Image 1 (cartoon, rainbow, N blue to C red):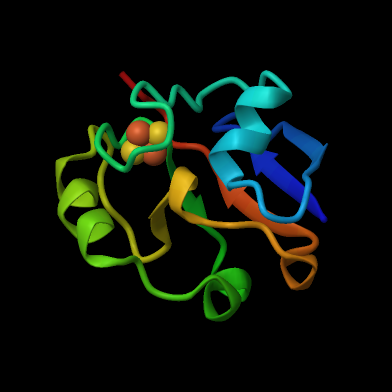
Image 2: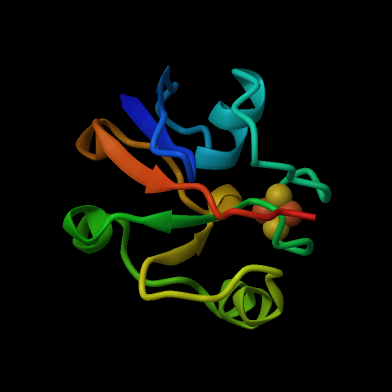
Length: 106
Ligand code: FES
């Protein structure tokens, strides 16, 4: 499944993800700037914060409890589509998932 990462300047990076990997993993594997992932995917750093586009939200679903708490601590403002990239697992159904990368990720 493909993931589209949109930078704050509007530039897009399309990445071929593997089903089962996370949105964070696919980004770091392809060197997408702005996804830092300090904790390596343990849902403890919030530096993999992404904004899921509204059209994809129903497919991605709600953040889990750990994610909820961490998103409040993320450096960039929390919005409706805020999710931790390491907690979104890619599936074929999510093909074409588009996420915005926050302006700052420590
Ligand atoms: Fe640290 Fe996602 S990589 S919370």
